[in-house]
Image 1 (cartoon, rainbow, N blue to C red):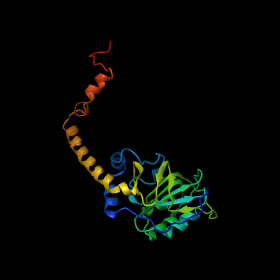
Image 2 (cartoon, rainbow, N blue to C red):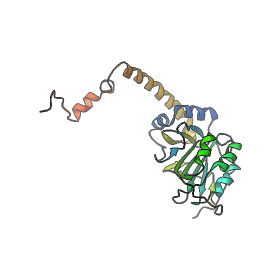
Image 3 (spheres, rainbow, N blue to C red):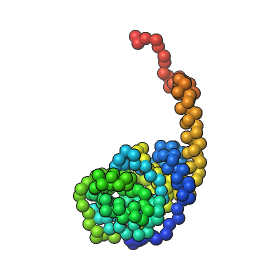
Image 4 (tube, rainbow, N blue to C red):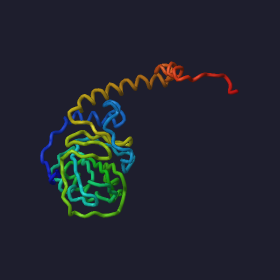
Length: 230
């Protein structure tokens, strides 16, 4: 059954404080804290090095080369949302530029994650508008084909439901299911605290071979130590 083009006006969102904590943890820690799940494909790169964002996913499904539904989505977004855009088939066309960014920012959108192309990168960076995209292309788009807003999508290999938490930085983009957000934030904080203890031991010169118990692993794998190569 083919899904009729749909715009869902209201979606549930995670608690703002929880979203902020996940953003502070960063992509790598969040990904590990939720069992190494939810990571988008590594071709999703930020347009400038300092780009960082965390917010509720407002999902958009577009026809390739057509940004009509991005314009439609701006009307139903709320402050703190991250636009998550995918296309019904592969596209690298420049579907988002500085004018859309101005409109999105005026309505409180904090970032864009798009499994397609963008344009006007210099202007977007100057605006300090965080974007993660698959491609950069000056190829323009049309506004002619219906799609959907706030439906479940697959973006860069990750399932994204409306209201899921998006965390993005230089390490990529990770999706946290809305219902798991508070628990992932708790586990992530515990992981960061544990890593700080490990970091201090490494600073003192301890070897990971010892405190991770890896010497025994080397023995199990048949690795031998010799003083000189014969």
